Image 1 (cartoon, rainbow, N blue to C red):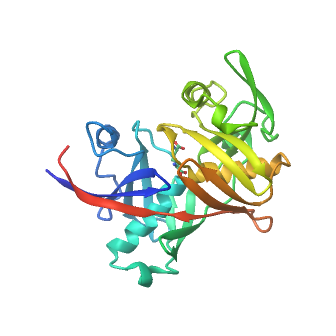
Image 2: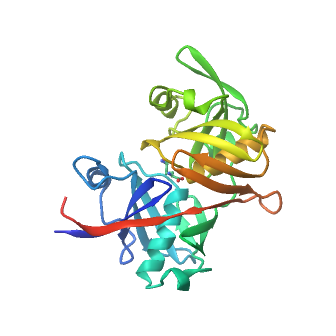
Length: 285
Ligand SMILES: N[C@@H](CCC[C@H](N)C(=O)O)C(=O)O
């Protein structure tokens, strides 16, 4: 049987979106998601996102499978894509959707994207989580934040900072992000025993205190062109290390995201960036 889908991307971090509003269980299994995401034998994507009915007072719920079939708690670029997908499903064109806000239930809690016009979406990403058990990591004592901790990988030692945006991130500041052998070191850190649920990895070059260049190795997806939760975690880690301002442009291989880590309230992170529909179709795989 053929299943309808739409393909979206946020700065080249690309997703297959499914209208799953009739059931709380995803219409695809993790194994099917792996096949759909295959860039040679399937549609090709970094993950599959399901638009599900709301729960706990939310408008909708989001679940996502990475391209390896694992299920992350949250996805920043993905939730911008989901907001535009939902607006399209509701029949709202670009003009009618400006200002529209959705409360989305995710495995990382309630996240609120707002359509901002010109294909852009602004997202209240919630607060970062900084205790080792929340990330999770074994790199620091239970009540201590994992900031600037030594991590041995093969014959090299990195100074890493760990931040959760609902999903785990390991942030490493380097003088030149383009010099990193991402395909070699990325998977070693993703699967390092210090991260019992694996981790996303960001190599960060501080160009200016308000402008950061980032290369990402994603848990369950490998090198991607952008990572929204990773960009937020990077700014949080930069502030905690005294290396950047709270409002930054984060330049990823696919383009820039605007990130702010608020000082007030619960210290939510805010992200603004594009989300684009690429095509829609029916898949028989
Ligand atoms: N690309 C995403 C993050 C997707 C989930 C990640 N691979 C994980 O397993 O945590 C983003 O834009 O945040």
